[in-house]
Length: 163
Image (cartoon, rainbow, N blue to C red):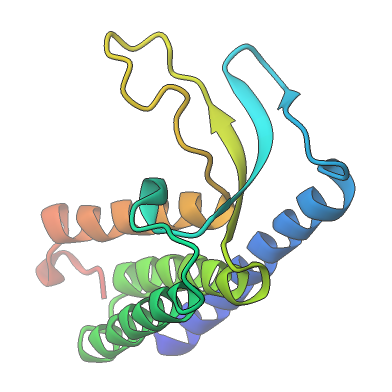
């Protein structure tokens, strides 16, 4: 199961980095806002913090501290997978780890995570996060990995044959 998770993580890292370099070198040269639809734009931001830009700063140590935390979490996920080797956990660990490593690469290369997908959710009755903070493919894949993990924990049991 660990090999499956590693291969999936490598595929996710490759797709994530390819999408970011395409945006950086082809689409956002020069940087601008590209309106795709009335609710979706391509933008270019470098998030120096964590989710939603929290804890962002210009500290020269910030990328290394946040990268270290991400690597520790990825290591913990693989230790857990080693102890609970199921297909669903391998899937979620591969997705989450690949997305996290893709963002770690950004922190070390670009000093911040390259985000470029921006949605306006003005149709919601409240105006919090409008537009929604920009994100990237890695963030989306991490989200899917967490959903898989929640599904596994809430609805699947070892007796149902998810091993």
